[in-house]
Structure formats: structure tokens, C-alpha cells
Image (cartoon, rainbow over all chains, first blue to last red):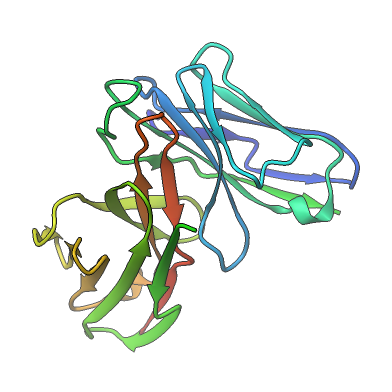
Amino acid sequence: DTGVSQDPRHKITKRGQNVTFRCDPISEHNRLYWYRQTLGQGPEFLTYFQNEAQLEKSRLLSDRFSAERPKGSFSTLEIQRTEQGDSAMYLCASSLRDRVWGPMNTEAFFGQGTRLTVV
Amino acid sequence: EDKVVQSPLSLVVHEGDTVTLNCSYEVTNFRSLLWYKQEKKAPTFLFMLTSSGIEKKSGRLSSILDKKELFSILNITATQTGDSAVYLCAVFQYSGGGADGLTFGKGTHLIIQP
């Protein structure tokens, strides 16, 4: 499978626990995005990486959230001290850009998402 | 504040009907507009529109962008039950400083009845 893959697909956790999600983008894609989607809403931007550099973080990303892409390949999104309001689908997407400041070459391809339920 | 507004939010039609979904936007540094289809899980890509007035087609689906009036439409002709999904519109914004990304609308929930 050469698409974007996310792991796990489902996660149920107790409030206050930490969780970590992983995203493996399409191999040649240098851009990686994290989005959060709640029921009835479109995906909301959280953060994105150009290679290993985290270039932007949304105001939605509180200090309990941290994302990394250490080698410019896979990425992890960690949520510390989870709250019930964190329950959502967390989507990862990747795309290809030919220069850091250049235009988007390709559309963003999405993974299947990780559905987080905080109880 | 950047915003992408889709209408209608939900739509129920009968199989064989033609539907038109709308997406209007107000964003800074517009680069392109994308349509996605979302069934139970991840959004799947349909179209990317960059130039105004050029229709893109894929089978029974077509889409066009109007950059002067800041909107796009997605048409589906001869609808089938398999077209039932949430259709998401997203705008890609570009900033020379490297801060860019997709802003999504809330989606149109389309239900095709047999």
C-alpha cells in the first residue's frame, strides 16, 4: 500500500492519559499535515511539516499537543493529559512541493484517520 | 478571518437526479480550491481547481471555479446511491513565508435515495 497510513485506527483512552498517533506519508511527499475532524464538521488544520521542519501550528493546538517529524518521514502527534473534548478523528495528509516557498504541486492525500475516544 | 462556506449543508435527492453543490470562500492568498468526497473515513480527492472558468470533469462529476465571484460548484449528474457521502470543499492558501495549508468548509451531506 503506497498511500498515507495512520496507526492506530481507533484509540479509546481514559481522561488524563497520554496518547500518541503515528502517520506514514506517501514516501516522496515532503509536506505532512495534521487535521482534526469532529462530527458534522470539516477537517480543522492543526499543524504541518515541510520535511522535518514544523512550519505552522494552529491556535487549536494547545500546549498539551505536540507533533514531530524527526527525520522528515513519518510523524507523530502526541496529546498529553487527554480531555473529553479531544475526542475526534485525527487525520494526516501529505503532499509534494518542489520548493520550500513554492506552490503546491499536488493535492493532499489523506490517511484513514485515527478515531480517538476519551472516556 | 479566512472562511469557506458550503451550501446546502445537507441534501436528499432521488437516484438519477442531478445535484449542484456550492462552495464560496473568503481567504487571503488563494492558491487553489479542492473538492473531496468523504464516506466513512478519510476524504478522497476529487478535483483541484486553480484557474477560473475551466471545467474539470471525471465521469459524472464536474467542477468549475469562479475566482472573480469567489466560488466553485460541484455537479453530479445521474446520481447513484454510491454518490451518498459528505462532499468537502477546501481552499489552499499560499504564503511566501511558508505558512500555508488547507481550510475546509463544513461539507455538504448528500443522500441519494433509491
